[in-house]
Image 1 (cartoon, rainbow, N blue to C red):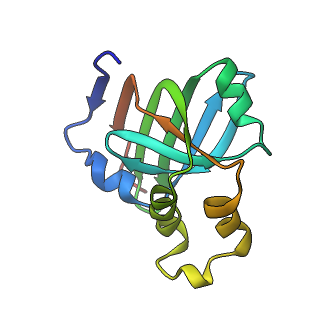
Image 2: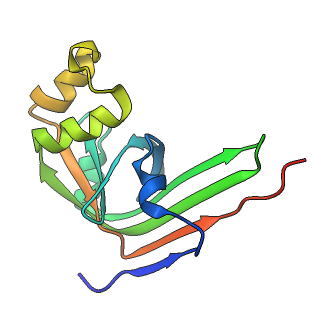
Length: 147
């Protein structure tokens, strides 16, 4: 892969922002946009999918993906945004990576996780990991002074 184009505002802490359990919105050919829980790891976004949303089939035909993670706090005027795009890759399920991803959103007590998410993350043979190493990434602070 060629070098990524990265633009990060000077006051934006990309790692800290992407460590939060936020929802990313992924757009694929179709067009189709869907929310995903993600893991930012090793310079890439990772998320789980299976056959039910047809995302795997869509990405096999056209791997181009655009992704946005953002927050907007009206009380403080803090608005942060990360956008990325590139070609997504489909990987076999890596249970340890899936576990790290699910812990971000469900907490460390796996015994309390919903059974359907445990099935998806560890036992469903159709589950795959999608990886997006951004060709372009932009992290911006769009904050304003709250009234």
